[in-house]
Length: 281
Figure 1: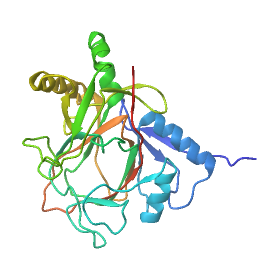
Figure 2: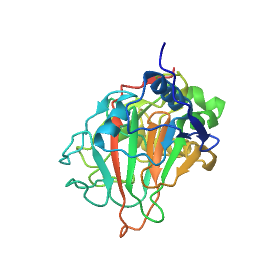
Figure 3: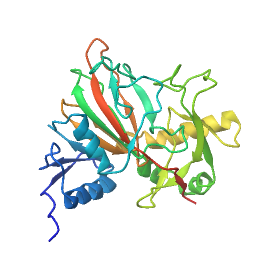
Figure 4: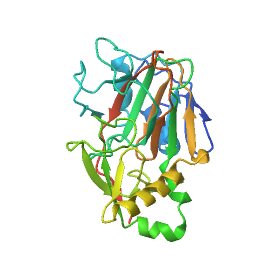
């Protein structure tokens, strides 16, 4: 007889995406049936929250492997564990934090590379009293909001993503570092599991529409980011210590709100290796 999945309580976090999962202990290895149930829930909700988890690096790494291969960092920062990044304004276990302060524009992790991240986990170690929240926007919801007469045009376009993490790590800006990573992807992609159309465009990294004059490109990117960032298309997560979040990096874009830099904020990040997105055409 196959193992029965754990009895999970699923509490939606917003009308558009996200669910809190209760009734599961992530400090122990899960049975295959429960892992399958979590994968189905992740496909449905795009963002899963587990509160009160007690996880070290091995347990978080094991959790990531339920959903795919662990992604090593491409960051120039020296790390004790190549797959572990601390999104923090303090050092953790002798490792300097990265992306330490300030708000951050919506983005999809590693969109500026040929293989964007499949998904990302963040585990909360220290949280400021106010702010530092993470916003998640549905890329399926953004595509659905695009007027029908514009969709057919978008489905034939590519967008060049650039991330100048040296000079403009949190916000898009100019001039751009010449060696900033960059890669073009279809503007509308198909979700690798469901085939659902997703609007793959974000404010931080979308530099230009391939083949468009810059002014025309800027106007279209601004219009598309407006569909993505509509309040009704966004879930805002207010962190608590020991929260674990996993999100689908293609089905969502994410951003960060500002917080007092005098307060400590530290989250441990381990991501899931991705593949090259396929065009929805």
